[in-house]
Length: 313
Image (tube, rainbow, N blue to C red; front, side):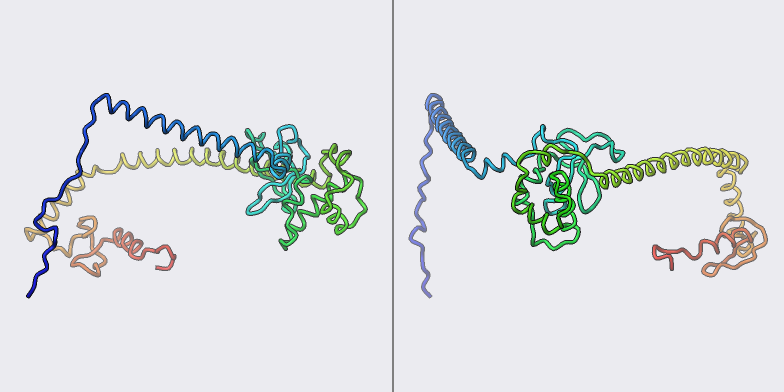
């Protein structure tokens, strides 16, 4: 049998030489490394500046920046797009007081959602003007009745502000898809009044909010009253507890009885195995030698069958 021997076997491996630098050399190395890192950071900054400049000069980006909702355009009654669930949805900016809500937080606005008739507090940075970005966010392929209804309601508000009330729904949608022609300036952009049907809906939402607030106040009052009743019950229980014999006295009495059972003075069948009393045993225990007195029998039967989470067994 031939054994193959490795060529490197028996040879001493040469370890890589470790070079030791002096303190001065280490300082020079650190300085060189720091200069290289600074140059890399400068290059990154230059690339970032060039990229930002390119974005600013891009017409598409300029259009997107123009379509942002600014603080000046966040006016009550303005129509906007904002993300509602998974897609952009048309809405109208409103005040929280119109629906019985507190003022909006910083950088947020209350939005009334078309098609749904609900309100939400949304981030203002995620909002887009309805007219300026209609072509970007309107999705005609999304066949949802609530979405279709929301588009029709929002476009009809625009039409009312532009004086096109008599047009059909299809004509108004076509008018919107063509860019709301004839509405670059004028009453459509200046008018921010809230239509009557939206005001009626907001009034209902406000009433519901007030009713809920009233119910909460009533619940708190009931809890206060119940709290008073509970205090009285606790006082009664404390009085009853004061009238009961001490546990130590009961324990000593039971211990004395069971000692007599062990001595043979008492039979185990003559002692209640629950309370240790020597009253007349009226019920034999189904599993143990011994029985219960009348009161312990009732307690035992009440706790013999317990219901589970299914309320069956």
